[in-house]
Length: 356
Image (tube, rainbow, N blue to C red; front, top):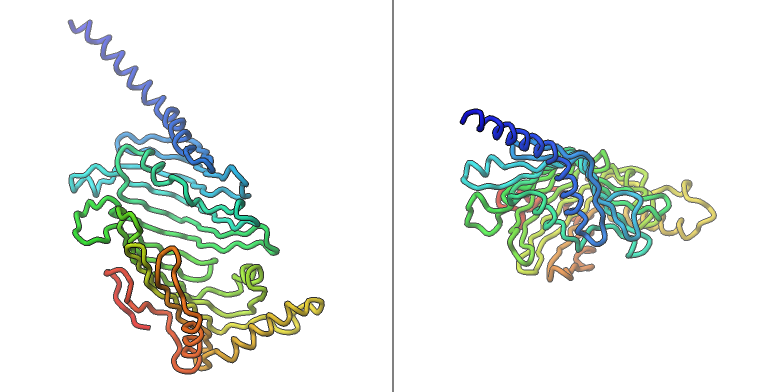
């Protein structure tokens, strides 16, 4: 009897070993088929590694590229993407997964025509992610990521980016069993153009048909010289020096948006007269105008030009008031300078209001 059992065990062990060896190859083909569901984007993956004891597998060198009117850079590129069991959820009696992205790169492209834009909008990304792991994804982590906005058809080319992005998105499936409406939370920290400090916090209801969320972001001490390609491409002027701050809070509910943004320029100098090309009088006039108006409406004690913009109305067509913007420019210049602080009016509940 023992002699009969031994060959069976040997065969079973051999089959298990063969299955384990073949699993990465099968997963690689499965991942390729799954990410090819998008009609406008194509996926490419490198080696797939399996970690059975952790209930995880890793995809190396993942790239997602646009196939129609392709851009010079991939829409997404990741050094390593790992799907694994979320042991925090397991302690709560729930089988949930988590995704970790190591050095991901996301590239949004403004093309010369609308067809050449690369935004990733309208694609089944969430469905694809859910199909890549057998359990529902409850947590996502980004380690050392980058997000770029590019315009290759401009001269010079535009490349505005966030680097050193560290982000955590939690409670996508409400394993915390919270009763309040806003369940999932997102926290992001990054460097803007290797200069400014960027932070964002957001709370949202991932089950809502219309996006219900509360968002607060702050960008501080960005060197405006790093925005010159963007300023020249879309505004026809240059900066010579200064810093840029941006504070914003936005809340959406049932298709309506309510919030504000405060763009603030400190110690800013627009290009001087001797730096303007003599053979382009229209460029000279615009840059001189920007410089003069900015100088007159600058809060002199703080050397700051800024305003506060109210954003409200339907989500598809939010309203802003030109007169309010102008009035707040005057308020910043002659009454009291705005400070790069959150007001706490629409920030997530975990935020402490800081005033303006």
